[in-house]
Length: 387
Image (cartoon, rainbow, N blue to C red):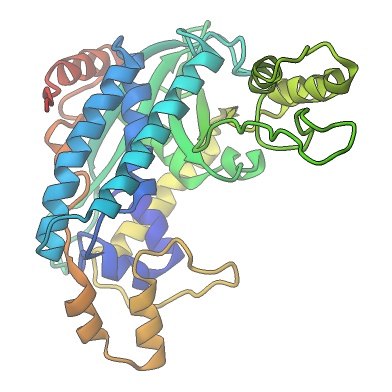
């Protein structure tokens, strides 16, 4: 059971029952959702940089890999190759990934955790993409399962200037998260709890590293017959002071012109204090929250391992991000759910199965030095992808 699967179970058991690899494992036919692979691609680039690799090369290698896997999986699900239009959409997403990651390192520099722009102390990167597997003490005497593991992947491991342990998570977003929600987030607290088990010492802080899945917009050149004809719009769009300044120069104008100077100052203030594209939060890890997380998780795993009653949860905020919403809709309307399953779904594979072949566990590591050594060896084993 992954840490994120626990969240799915708590949110809606019907969604979990349909989609979990431990249950029906249903996935829709067609191309994988781009927001899923785009997030993974960006993770690959940011993780590679922590391990001393060129992030743009790592990004391109990952995109080549996901292109190959997407073609194979699409053929498996649909029985036909992807169309030209679908590949065009894939390529557009790949270009966006490159532009977002390029902007990330232009913003933070070659040492993105030096604390200068991140609103956190200088952090020393130690390891990235740490996939773990922890055996859990669940009573299975009346269960169909033989063993229960808690699994997940921690994006980054750091130390602070005082030697404290900090873990991090790279999150792509389209809408900013509230720090009050992040501070005691189930996933972040859970990763801290699991890391403490692996290295046998407390985790002091958590770094939320948010990356917006968009790039700065270019201001429009005004038309019409007024005095601003041919000048740039000062509309409040998602852009940066540097992007706007370049647009002024490209338009043959002077950034110090009073028409632009006030707008540039407002953009610079937003870039510094409320950046649209990158946001970091340096969160405390509370020992009390970690203890309660373990109690809660053990109780949930006991339920999940013993064929729980499958209930559903349709919230007023909507189920827009549920991958099996049409199945739930059909079931609630009394329609033919089995026909829909056979028509639009196939049996999926466990998403982290490949990653789980290179895991850390309490049996393989016992300290932070063990973990760093293990992570470095696994990184050196990454396959080359060409073509």
